Image 1 (cartoon, rainbow, N blue to C red):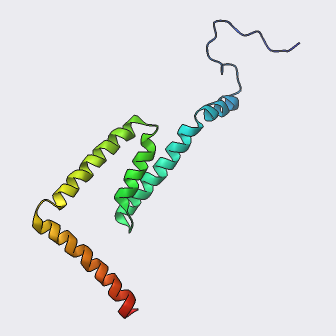
Image 2 (image 1 turned 135 degrees about the horizontal axis):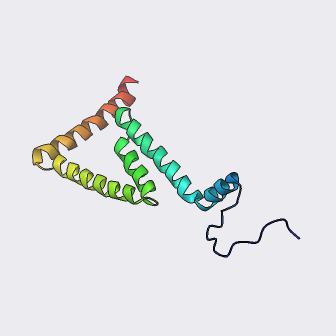
Image 3 (image 1 turned 90 degrees about the horizontal axis):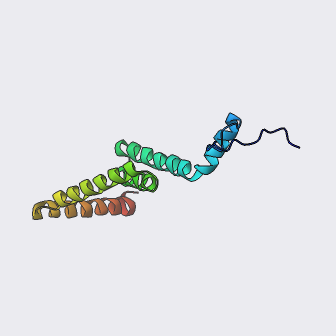
Length: 123
């Protein structure tokens, strides 16, 4: 025989009567994927925000973090949609006129040439 009382037929919460640590372990077990996705998504999102002010692809980091979070959270999916829309608008604005397009292409070519000159002649 066991010392446990008989379960109450009206009781709907299966965690009721468990030790608090057991309840926490049970919650983590059921929500493990969501917790892991949340931690990973916020880590990538934070890295993207940091890369906005330091060298690195900050916008891509933010979009990647929101993409990870959007697999589990509706608010992240809405923020991701807004970020995609704004990125598309920025791309259109950057190439709106032939002058801006030429400026972007020229700056890219000058950057490539500067790197090649550095590696082949200066270094």
